Length: 342
Image 1 (cartoon, rainbow, N blue to C red):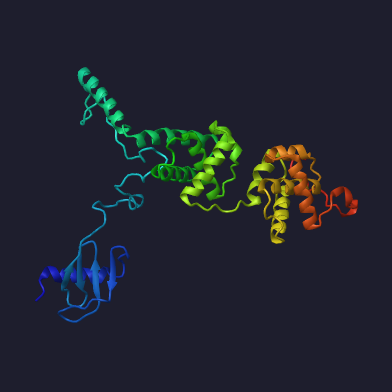
Image 2: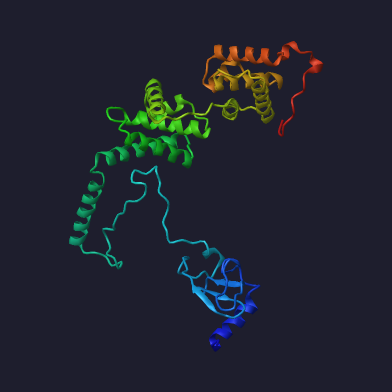
């Protein structure tokens, strides 16, 4: 026999069943009521019960695994009590704690002798955190990683990937007897290669104050010991940076990308330096659009030599059957597209 409380609860369920959201209520047809054999079971997460919709029997009680607070605004629905995620680019991954030396737990100011004591305790606490050799190594390396990432404008995800690579190398004891700066620069270059970020090795080595050969040897050692297979560099990703240094028009940059894609479709880019190919495609696009840029300017912007640039230009011309603008009749040359302000 149902109690008045169960009858009121049943009527409330029947009137609000169609309006409750899926988050607070869902129908479960897999269970059967042991009293009446009904299959329409209402699972009320808010009340913590599973109730039969036909006879009102409370079949079982469920445990609410959600938050213990209530959300009065829409912005409070997704809040969480957990802190931030682990940050690999910090030497302690953001898990260390510190205490205030001026106020106590209730917010009241401390006395002078208590402040001096707290300062001494904080100094001992900071020393104990980096007492381990690996912790000291990480504190130095992550500071250098932060400086180097800021200097070359590296995104946050690439910095975290470089920090993970450095931690793997440190756990394998690869840094003993070697330069920390070289390993940091090699990890940064490896992270850029893995994510397709156009950062040349010379630029990274220049900002890290290490020789290019030293960083290159460390990079090869890193790939060998960790078993990393790097993706092949695409020439198209170097075009925007070179075009920005030369102040070229957008249409010239697009034509250079089209030249590289056509050469790639004909399998003419294998075994060539991607930066040299990007510079050669931009030089041909400049000739086609009549933007005057010398080979020396293009080679300096790409970080290559004029001899490499001329060889890559000859290769692209032979592969794509492209003729220089000087060899094309004037009636066949497309006029340059006017831009705003010219």
